[in-house]
Image (cartoon, rainbow, N blue to C red; front, side, top):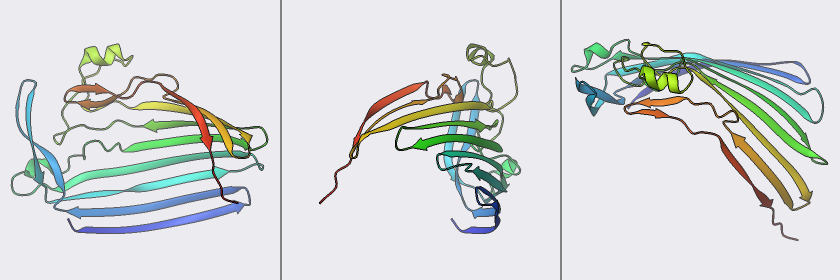
Length: 218
């Protein structure tokens, strides 16, 4: 699977407490392996792992970080990812210009953290994922009833709808070698879709807690 890639980035710190980074990239893969649809009869789909002729993935990634003091950190990031088939190979010419499945074009995040070892460490983050396709043909949809049950408007647009997830973590040092922590993933229990064959939703709200012990030699 030969890979040709190019990358150009810039890192700017206009102030001591502010950093901004941007990277442009262009990756081209020859003979990648992909799930290719062979037949579709109603809800029955037959797929096979095959080599395509080539794909191209290019885009821009940028992030900014701001630290207004010794304890606070604010960060945000955005990724534009244009991932398409450039050569389907002799058997899959119809896939040319199709988007690669499970690769959202747009995604972003924000992160806020307060870390004071004397008192507490708290971190809150949100991830934003844009719409993405779930099949090589870019045609499969989430059934209207499933969208409605998850709180999405009814739609016949192919692909998996965009969604936003939030996470929260809290920890505190009790003694020098012992921390207690708790965290919540998918804080608002957002229902989101990760597959269409069959229709599959992502993880619900997950809560974890525990203690962390550090051992150190004399």
